[in-house]
Image 1 (cartoon, helix red, strand yellow):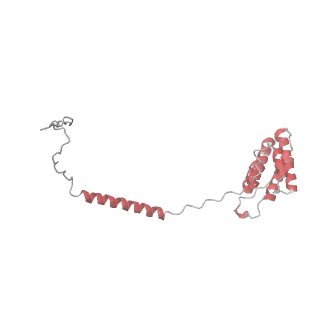
Image 2 (cartoon, rainbow, N blue to C red; image 1 turned 180 degrees about the vertical axis):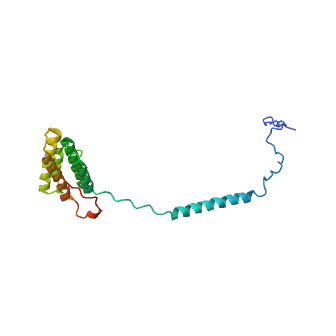
Image 3 (cartoon, rainbow, N blue to C red; image 1 turned 90 degrees about the horizontal axis):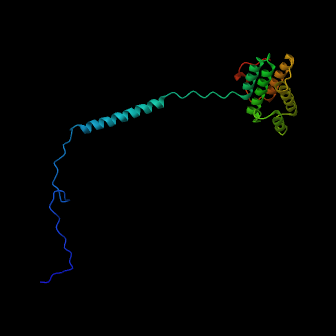
Length: 192
């Protein structure tokens, strides 16, 4: 008999218990309760009922109250001018309040960017606009110039001059008020 000397001889694995050999069967796993499926089904039904109740409750909720319409710019301007009128005895604060009321009104009504600019810058922009008439532009230039005298040049106006400034501001708001506005929805009229 001839042997194959080049053959590889693989030794048999040792017989130890930690080998990957076929293992024996495990015993059956006990089921904890016979009624577990019933409890799971009842829990699912309860969750579905709760979700349905919440959905119906949310659907039956009364609608939110309609949002109040924004206060028009001219109404806010009149209110600011009315508040400024209380400062008539303090010319410096009065002129700041009246000037700011008109500047904010022009910002809100015509998008002029008046509050952020100096009077000269604002008047320069205003000359190129067609939203105000030439008379309104002249009135506004006179108004802002008189306010600036009090605010920055320490001019001490009389009470009559301050009342005239206030009337000029109200007149400008009245002249530029939108035509589609219903006055019965406005707040109480402001008197000067």
